[in-house]
Amino acid sequence: TLVVVSNYTPSTVNTWFTDPTAAVQAIAGLRQAESLWDPSGALARLQQRAHAFTWSDELQAKANRWAGEQMVGWIEEVHKGLEGLRRGDVGRLLNASFGLSWGLMGVVKVQRGVLVYSDNSAIDQVMASVGVDSRWSELCAISFGVTPEKGVPPSLRARVLAGLQLYSVTADMLRPVFAVEHAPLIVRTSERIHRELAAETAK
Image 1 (cartoon, rainbow, N blue to C red):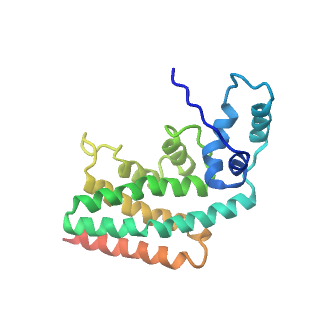
Image 2 (cartoon, rainbow, N blue to C red):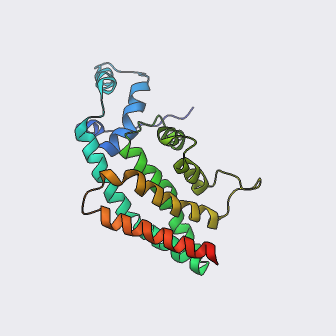
Image 3 (cartoon, helix red, strand yellow):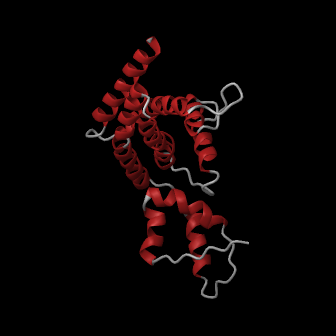
């Protein structure tokens, strides 16, 4: 049995209920936690608060803004991915693959307020929130390398290609919530992806 001991300050605990990036990671686990020793009742009170937690309009507004900021931040990985494909540069492709899989999954997780039970279930939970049969989930699975192609895992190149398309699909899906300062950058990046992948396909 592995026991992990962590200490949290009151201010950190409060962010679990006020910060969307913290809430998606903490609330579900807190709800299902089992107390081994809680003489002061502190955990019991926290669990009551967690069970009463709702995803408020204020949290959604914060999540929307955060999602836009992250999509702008992952533009660098888009550029690395496109350049890596053009040059056949493994280093650039490896760098791009993280942002175009874990990064984009995280964007949707927070924007949709998916309260994850554990890191092991996060991908499945986010896919379920979008739709397991959706184009988004299909591309997400390929970008993580978990969808076989002809019985074998997708290549690094195929994963990055899927991740680039995933960026565009995510941009289209979340476009209504992007702040005005984020939307033009994200849209132009998505257009560049469409343009360059079309040229790649035409070769």
